[in-house]
Image 1 (cartoon, rainbow, N blue to C red):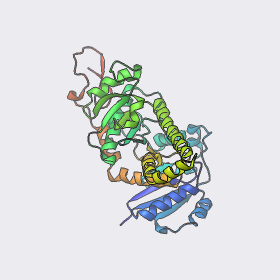
Image 2 (cartoon, helix red, strand yellow):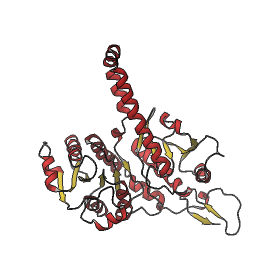
Image 3 (cartoon, rainbow, N blue to C red):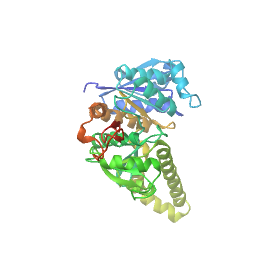
Image 4 (cartoon, one colour):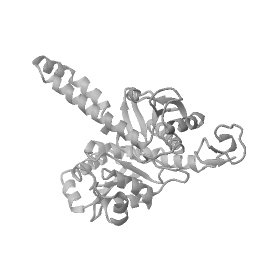
Length: 364
């Protein structure tokens, strides 16, 4: 099979770089022949890690970089000044079209700034949200946004819902994905100002299958496929779910090891329990893509190990095969039609209304 997709990999970003990053990449190319990995980072350190494995050498290239961006640096300043860093060089390779996607476990802020400044947003996209897949009782849901836009406005959340629907339908395979907005109750009248202003835009949008509000307790049940919120709330939800899952696993293991009966029961239940817990392991689903950019940028956890790195690489393959960037670009580049204007209520003068499709303010 010919190599079709080239992934730029930040070999120096994250707590376990470059070891786990390199290991995950090697595992990926040993499973798939249609991938090429382009490492950006300290070539001596990368080659030292590669020497531990057997792999098809023609599927790996290295660009040596002399700088790294740490998490305690100002993202904007670091992106601007550290032009020879593994992150900046990797992002520029996507911008130039040399690589199809970029993956990093490095500074979240730098990835967000670099993605939007160096790669750039698609025409018509107002904000680029981070959108991780989260495990639920029914499979996975997309949480959008989880860390990129804490000051989002209603028109931004509308676009998040539209981009999230495109992703879930074409990458995950969910037909007419259910879209819900995070709220403190199911009633339409509830919520803060942002939710109350966003709700009617989502309700009137013909692009999405909007089902109303979703409370935090219902998110793990999988009642919605696309969960829309601003980044502050989304990040809290994401980290609470991750922390709760880790705590439950720890408590279950301790309970099983507390007595002879528990150890015997644990041994019998281990195969089923292992399979169940695997489904709730976030690393199984790769990273969080920064949607709405001209190229694919994926952020993985700072503590990512080989499995999450490998799955993020496979995630990029699916993203490219389904032409998600092109679908988003086409969706937001097309002009708004008169019949797509939200509300269609009577109006005069300079009273502004939202477009259902783009969230643009339109004078009627």
